[in-house]
Image (cartoon, rainbow, N blue to C red):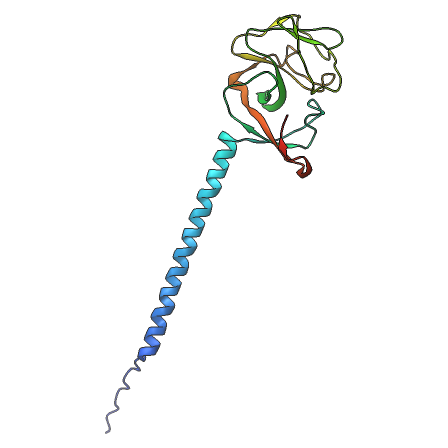
Length: 196
């Protein structure tokens, strides 16, 4: 009876081992680089969302209450500043919506309007070069009106259609309601630039 010899296992050559090691190294580097890239993208996206929500909100304009300065469909950037001046355009929360209006009266000032829509602040006429037409519009508050401390009297630039501080429903805007001051128009592209 003849004894069968066991076939010895075929060992890979040095070149085959080097090629396999190289392939495994490449695979490890590929997955490591992919994980790193995904991690960087997630951090960048999270940072962009935080900045846009907390520091630089991006808003879309709906309606015509700020015509001609801002029109329906404009996209603008606001900045949370904490200090607002007369003439600033601000965005603020009202009834789960964000409204955009111009600051006309500061805390403690007396605001008055005549039937033609001419505004006076503490008895001095207010220059409003941004208006195309003046109108009293919807006004159910008693004039002259003293702006409460810590609040701002705001009005839209299209006075005949704007619901703003002249309406007792909207009233004056507190600092807690303010989203930010509108500084920059982002859309449409042909109008990109600072908001005046």
